[in-house]
Length: 277
Image 1 (cartoon, rainbow, N blue to C red):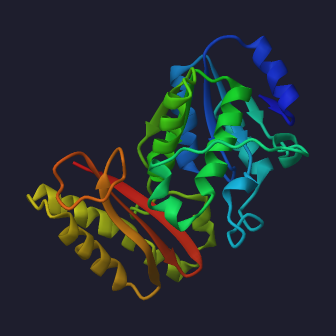
Image 2: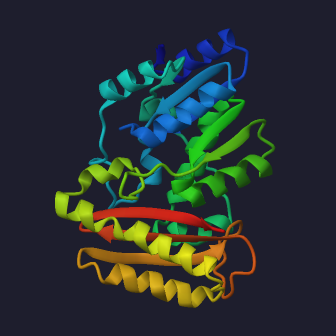
Protein backbone atom coordinates (compact mmCIF):
# COMPACT_ATOMS: atom_id res chain seq x y z
CA UNK A 1 0.00 0.00 0.00
CA UNK A 2 1.40 3.38 -1.02
CA UNK A 3 0.82 6.51 1.05
CA UNK A 4 0.70 9.86 -0.71
CA UNK A 5 1.07 12.76 1.69
CA UNK A 6 0.89 15.42 -1.01
CA UNK A 7 -1.22 16.01 -4.09
CA UNK A 8 1.92 15.80 -6.24
CA UNK A 9 2.79 12.36 -4.81
CA UNK A 10 -0.69 11.09 -5.56
CA UNK A 11 -0.65 12.41 -9.13
CA UNK A 12 2.62 10.59 -9.66
CA UNK A 13 0.93 7.36 -8.51
CA UNK A 14 -2.04 7.99 -10.82
CA UNK A 15 0.21 8.38 -13.87
CA UNK A 16 1.62 4.94 -13.14
CA UNK A 17 -1.83 3.36 -12.66
CA UNK A 18 -4.02 3.92 -15.69
CA UNK A 19 -6.71 1.31 -15.10
CA UNK A 20 -10.03 1.73 -13.30
CA UNK A 21 -9.74 3.31 -9.86
CA UNK A 22 -12.39 3.05 -7.17
CA UNK A 23 -12.24 5.95 -4.72
CA UNK A 24 -13.50 6.25 -1.14
CA UNK A 25 -13.15 9.75 0.30
CA UNK A 26 -13.16 9.79 4.12
CA UNK A 27 -12.38 12.03 7.06
CA UNK A 28 -10.68 9.12 8.78
CA UNK A 29 -11.39 7.42 12.09
CA UNK A 30 -12.61 4.53 10.00
CA UNK A 31 -15.33 2.06 10.94
CA UNK A 32 -17.10 -0.84 9.23
CA UNK A 33 -19.25 1.57 7.23
CA UNK A 34 -16.13 2.91 5.50
CA UNK A 35 -14.68 -0.57 5.03
CA UNK A 36 -17.84 -1.78 3.27
CA UNK A 37 -17.29 1.00 0.72
CA UNK A 38 -13.66 -0.04 0.31
CA UNK A 39 -14.64 -3.68 -0.26
CA UNK A 40 -17.16 -2.77 -2.93
CA UNK A 41 -14.57 -0.55 -4.61
CA UNK A 42 -12.15 -3.49 -4.55
CA UNK A 43 -14.71 -5.77 -6.23
CA UNK A 44 -15.52 -3.31 -9.00
CA UNK A 45 -12.14 -1.75 -9.90
CA UNK A 46 -8.57 -2.76 -10.67
CA UNK A 47 -7.20 -0.30 -8.07
CA UNK A 48 -8.60 1.21 -4.86
CA UNK A 49 -7.78 4.65 -3.49
CA UNK A 50 -8.86 6.13 -0.15
CA UNK A 51 -8.39 9.67 1.07
CA UNK A 52 -8.15 10.71 4.71
CA UNK A 53 -8.74 14.42 5.14
CA UNK A 54 -10.69 16.25 7.85
CA UNK A 55 -11.91 19.06 5.66
CA UNK A 56 -11.95 22.35 7.60
CA UNK A 57 -14.19 24.16 5.10
CA UNK A 58 -17.25 22.00 5.81
CA UNK A 59 -17.25 22.74 9.56
CA UNK A 60 -18.98 25.79 11.00
CA UNK A 61 -17.24 27.99 13.59
CA UNK A 62 -19.07 26.33 16.51
CA UNK A 63 -18.72 22.76 15.19
CA UNK A 64 -16.33 19.99 16.13
CA UNK A 65 -13.45 20.39 13.64
CA UNK A 66 -10.71 20.43 16.31
CA UNK A 67 -12.35 17.67 18.34
CA UNK A 68 -13.18 15.43 15.37
CA UNK A 69 -11.67 11.98 16.13
CA UNK A 70 -8.39 11.20 14.38
CA UNK A 71 -6.21 8.09 14.41
CA UNK A 72 -4.29 7.86 11.15
CA UNK A 73 -2.05 4.98 12.24
CA UNK A 74 -5.08 2.83 13.06
CA UNK A 75 -6.79 3.87 9.81
CA UNK A 76 -3.80 2.88 7.72
CA UNK A 77 -3.59 -0.52 9.41
CA UNK A 78 -7.26 -1.17 8.58
CA UNK A 79 -6.78 -0.09 4.97
CA UNK A 80 -3.70 -2.27 4.59
CA UNK A 81 -5.79 -5.28 5.62
CA UNK A 82 -8.35 -4.36 2.95
CA UNK A 83 -5.59 -4.34 0.30
CA UNK A 84 -6.06 -0.68 -0.60
CA UNK A 85 -3.55 0.37 -3.25
CA UNK A 86 -2.97 4.00 -2.28
CA UNK A 87 -4.04 6.37 0.50
CA UNK A 88 -4.03 10.13 0.02
CA UNK A 89 -3.43 12.07 3.26
CA UNK A 90 -3.04 15.69 2.19
CA UNK A 91 -2.49 18.65 4.50
CA UNK A 92 -4.93 21.55 4.68
CA UNK A 93 -2.15 23.77 3.31
CA UNK A 94 -1.81 21.53 0.25
CA UNK A 95 -5.56 21.43 -0.37
CA UNK A 96 -6.14 25.13 0.33
CA UNK A 97 -2.87 26.97 -0.36
CA UNK A 98 -2.45 30.67 0.39
CA UNK A 99 -4.60 32.72 -1.94
CA UNK A 100 -7.16 29.93 -2.51
CA UNK A 101 -10.39 31.56 -3.75
CA UNK A 102 -12.39 28.99 -5.73
CA UNK A 103 -15.55 27.30 -4.44
CA UNK A 104 -18.20 24.91 -5.75
CA UNK A 105 -21.82 25.48 -4.77
CA UNK A 106 -24.76 23.24 -5.64
CA UNK A 107 -28.04 25.11 -5.34
CA UNK A 108 -31.55 23.90 -4.45
CA UNK A 109 -30.61 20.47 -3.02
CA UNK A 110 -28.41 22.13 -0.39
CA UNK A 111 -31.02 24.61 0.83
CA UNK A 112 -32.92 22.17 3.04
CA UNK A 113 -32.24 19.88 6.01
CA UNK A 114 -28.49 19.86 6.71
CA UNK A 115 -28.02 22.89 4.49
CA UNK A 116 -30.42 25.04 6.49
CA UNK A 117 -28.97 23.92 9.84
CA UNK A 118 -25.29 24.07 8.82
CA UNK A 119 -24.78 27.15 6.63
CA UNK A 120 -21.80 26.77 4.32
CA UNK A 121 -21.45 23.04 5.01
CA UNK A 122 -22.23 21.84 1.50
CA UNK A 123 -20.13 24.56 -0.09
CA UNK A 124 -17.17 23.02 1.75
CA UNK A 125 -18.25 19.46 0.91
CA UNK A 126 -18.78 20.10 -2.80
CA UNK A 127 -15.51 22.00 -3.10
CA UNK A 128 -13.34 19.40 -1.39
CA UNK A 129 -14.98 16.50 -3.23
CA UNK A 130 -14.56 18.26 -6.58
CA UNK A 131 -10.89 18.81 -5.76
CA UNK A 132 -10.43 15.19 -4.72
CA UNK A 133 -12.11 13.96 -7.90
CA UNK A 134 -9.74 16.11 -9.96
CA UNK A 135 -6.72 14.78 -8.04
CA UNK A 136 -7.71 11.11 -7.98
CA UNK A 137 -9.49 10.87 -11.36
CA UNK A 138 -11.57 7.92 -10.16
CA UNK A 139 -13.68 5.64 -12.33
CA UNK A 140 -16.18 5.19 -9.52
CA UNK A 141 -16.53 6.98 -6.16
CA UNK A 142 -18.29 5.41 -3.18
CA UNK A 143 -20.45 7.11 -0.54
CA UNK A 144 -22.72 5.87 2.25
CA UNK A 145 -26.50 6.29 2.27
CA UNK A 146 -26.29 7.56 5.87
CA UNK A 147 -25.24 10.93 4.44
CA UNK A 148 -28.12 10.88 1.96
CA UNK A 149 -28.24 14.61 1.26
CA UNK A 150 -24.48 14.69 0.73
CA UNK A 151 -24.77 11.86 -1.80
CA UNK A 152 -27.52 13.74 -3.69
CA UNK A 153 -25.42 16.91 -3.73
CA UNK A 154 -22.38 15.07 -5.08
CA UNK A 155 -24.41 13.25 -7.73
CA UNK A 156 -25.89 16.57 -8.85
CA UNK A 157 -22.44 18.21 -8.99
CA UNK A 158 -21.03 15.32 -11.04
CA UNK A 159 -23.95 15.50 -13.49
CA UNK A 160 -24.02 19.29 -13.81
CA UNK A 161 -20.25 19.64 -14.27
CA UNK A 162 -20.00 16.65 -16.64
CA UNK A 163 -17.47 14.90 -14.43
CA UNK A 164 -16.23 11.66 -15.89
CA UNK A 165 -17.02 9.23 -13.07
CA UNK A 166 -19.84 7.23 -11.53
CA UNK A 167 -21.09 7.91 -7.99
CA UNK A 168 -22.08 4.74 -6.12
CA UNK A 169 -24.25 5.05 -2.99
CA UNK A 170 -23.99 2.07 -0.62
CA UNK A 171 -26.64 1.20 2.02
CA UNK A 172 -26.09 2.42 5.58
CA UNK A 173 -24.13 0.05 7.83
CA UNK A 174 -25.64 -0.29 11.30
CA UNK A 175 -24.73 -1.58 14.71
CA UNK A 176 -26.64 -4.61 16.01
CA UNK A 177 -29.17 -2.31 17.73
CA UNK A 178 -29.78 -0.25 14.59
CA UNK A 179 -27.61 2.79 15.28
CA UNK A 180 -26.00 3.97 12.05
CA UNK A 181 -22.22 3.64 12.19
CA UNK A 182 -20.53 7.03 12.46
CA UNK A 183 -17.14 8.30 13.57
CA UNK A 184 -19.00 10.66 15.92
CA UNK A 185 -20.54 7.76 17.85
CA UNK A 186 -17.34 7.72 19.91
CA UNK A 187 -18.50 10.96 21.56
CA UNK A 188 -21.44 9.15 23.20
CA UNK A 189 -21.17 7.96 26.79
CA UNK A 190 -22.94 4.65 27.62
CA UNK A 191 -26.23 6.32 28.58
CA UNK A 192 -26.20 8.48 25.45
CA UNK A 193 -25.27 5.50 23.30
CA UNK A 194 -28.41 3.72 24.50
CA UNK A 195 -30.50 6.84 23.95
CA UNK A 196 -29.19 7.17 20.37
CA UNK A 197 -31.14 4.09 19.29
CA UNK A 198 -34.23 6.32 19.25
CA UNK A 199 -33.23 7.58 15.78
CA UNK A 200 -33.53 4.13 14.24
CA UNK A 201 -36.74 3.43 16.17
CA UNK A 202 -38.35 6.55 14.70
CA UNK A 203 -37.25 5.67 11.16
CA UNK A 204 -38.49 2.09 11.56
CA UNK A 205 -41.88 3.38 12.67
CA UNK A 206 -42.09 5.60 9.58
CA UNK A 207 -41.37 2.60 7.36
CA UNK A 208 -43.94 0.46 9.15
CA UNK A 209 -46.65 3.12 8.86
CA UNK A 210 -46.08 3.42 5.12
CA UNK A 211 -46.14 -0.35 4.68
CA UNK A 212 -49.51 -0.40 6.46
CA UNK A 213 -50.85 2.07 3.90
CA UNK A 214 -50.38 5.40 5.68
CA UNK A 215 -49.60 8.13 3.10
CA UNK A 216 -50.07 11.24 5.26
CA UNK A 217 -46.52 12.59 5.55
CA UNK A 218 -47.36 15.06 8.31
CA UNK A 219 -48.90 12.32 10.45
CA UNK A 220 -45.75 10.21 10.02
CA UNK A 221 -43.57 13.20 10.96
CA UNK A 222 -45.65 13.66 14.11
CA UNK A 223 -45.27 10.01 15.07
CA UNK A 224 -41.49 10.15 14.53
CA UNK A 225 -41.26 13.36 16.54
CA UNK A 226 -43.29 11.85 19.39
CA UNK A 227 -40.97 8.83 19.60
CA UNK A 228 -37.87 11.02 19.78
CA UNK A 229 -39.23 13.54 22.27
CA UNK A 230 -39.96 10.71 24.73
CA UNK A 231 -36.19 10.23 25.05
CA UNK A 232 -34.96 12.77 27.65
CA UNK A 233 -31.45 13.02 26.21
CA UNK A 234 -32.65 13.75 22.67
CA UNK A 235 -33.17 17.20 21.11
CA UNK A 236 -34.51 17.40 17.55
CA UNK A 237 -32.93 19.55 14.84
CA UNK A 238 -35.34 18.32 12.19
CA UNK A 239 -37.62 15.44 11.20
CA UNK A 240 -38.33 15.21 7.50
CA UNK A 241 -40.43 13.25 5.02
CA UNK A 242 -39.29 14.50 1.64
CA UNK A 243 -39.06 13.75 -2.06
CA UNK A 244 -36.13 11.34 -2.43
CA UNK A 245 -34.54 13.41 -5.22
CA UNK A 246 -35.35 17.07 -4.50
CA UNK A 247 -35.72 16.84 -0.68
CA UNK A 248 -38.86 18.97 -0.87
CA UNK A 249 -41.11 18.20 2.06
CA UNK A 250 -44.16 16.13 1.15
CA UNK A 251 -47.73 16.35 2.39
CA UNK A 252 -48.60 12.99 0.84
CA UNK A 253 -46.22 10.14 0.10
CA UNK A 254 -47.14 9.71 -3.55
CA UNK A 255 -43.61 9.28 -4.97
CA UNK A 256 -40.24 7.88 -3.85
CA UNK A 257 -39.56 9.47 -0.46
CA UNK A 258 -36.93 9.59 2.23
CA UNK A 259 -37.45 9.91 5.98
CA UNK A 260 -34.52 11.71 7.57
CA UNK A 261 -33.67 13.33 10.86
CA UNK A 262 -31.00 15.11 12.80
CA UNK A 263 -31.02 14.70 16.57
CA UNK A 264 -28.67 15.85 19.29
CA UNK A 265 -27.97 13.26 21.94
CA UNK A 266 -26.28 15.23 24.68
CA UNK A 267 -23.69 17.32 22.80
CA UNK A 268 -23.43 14.90 19.87
CA UNK A 269 -25.36 15.62 16.68
CA UNK A 270 -26.42 12.48 14.81
CA UNK A 271 -28.13 12.11 11.44
CA UNK A 272 -29.88 9.13 9.88
CA UNK A 273 -32.40 8.31 7.18
CA UNK A 274 -34.31 5.57 5.43
CA UNK A 275 -35.73 5.34 1.94
CA UNK A 276 -39.49 4.82 2.30
CA UNK A 277 -40.56 1.86 0.21
